[in-house]
Amino acid sequence: MRFLLFVLLFLSFAYSLGLVLANNTEVGVNLLFSQAPTMNLGLLLILCLMLGIVIGILLALLIFRVLQNKWEISRLQKANANLQEQLTQAHTVIDRQASAPTVDEAVYGASAANVQSSDATSLTEGSTLSKRRRD
Image 1 (tube, one colour):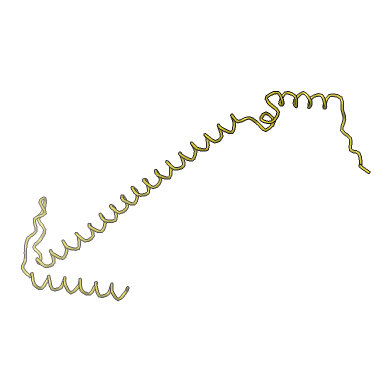
Image 2 (cartoon, helix red, strand yellow):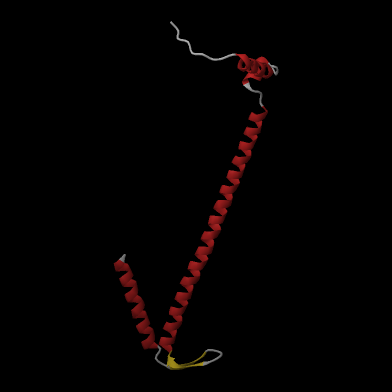
């Protein structure tokens, strides 16, 4: 990888040197609001090329970050919709279980709960619990 990077750096340097040597005329640069001093055309081309590369890389990184954020937002929205559906299903199951009869009601009928509660109160009124050992 380093070798490939070294070769690309060498080729870009050689191209820049050839550009400066091939375009050696002096030109004036008008920057709309000011005038730059005259400079070599090849050097001006290299500066514009480097400036374009730097701006292009920065814009590409910015666009990539924006796209990455959009992808992340869409992924999180899908996950949120999935969790919302699971929550709705859980609420449905809880409502079904809450309205379902208990085991005592299903086996003995609706009056079984009243019978058990009255038995429990009669036991606690006049009785004491004692531990006896079985022989």
